[in-house]
Amino acid sequence: MKEKDLLLKYLPSNSIEIVLNWIIEKNVHLKIAKKRNTKFGDYRPPIKNPNHRISINHDLNKYAFLITFVHELAHLVAWEKHGNKVSPHGIEWKTEYRHLMEVVLKEQVFPEEIHEVLKISIVNSKASSSSDLKLTRILKKYDLKQTGTSLEDIPENTLFKIENGKVFLKGNKRRTRYICKNIQTNKQYLFHPLTPIEVI
View 1: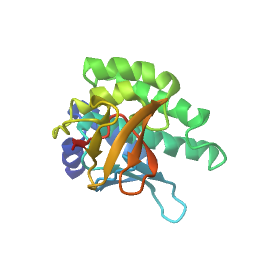
View 2: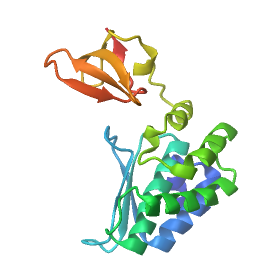
View 3: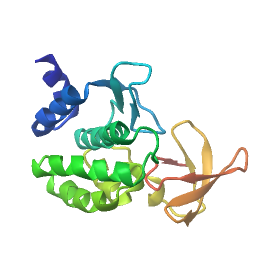
View 4: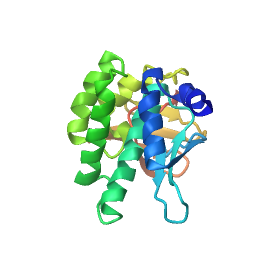
């Protein structure tokens, strides 16, 4: 079956049946999207289209792809039950995400270290998996293309360059993110600790 072959490129093999059943049951149009720096996935309800639509970035490793799919599917289920009357990542979404992820966890799809972190993570899930630093660090280990240095690896007051070529000075940490100053504009921005950077 073509669908299975396609999914096998992006998902762990022992998750294919679960995901395919959900796609068929929920009438999902799954789109493999180009890399987006601001998000890993996206859900759109069937308002202007007949299908629920989920898009996921093509460059995620198989475990991150699966987690992102479950995240977006939880939006779908929450929308079916509540429409747009609830917060996108409120208690309704968290409940659906936990229930769906528990189905996947029962199948022992993930390596043990991801499995254990996910079990804890789904008790009170973050709006984005990248907000869960422990989970993100472990998932990065399974990326085919390793990104090298992350922002958290360098000391404060170090100049660094990001993917688009802009240069920043690393500042101190505010809660979970670092305040960094753009050298050209002097404006300050908050950066995720695991942002890939190049030291200057």
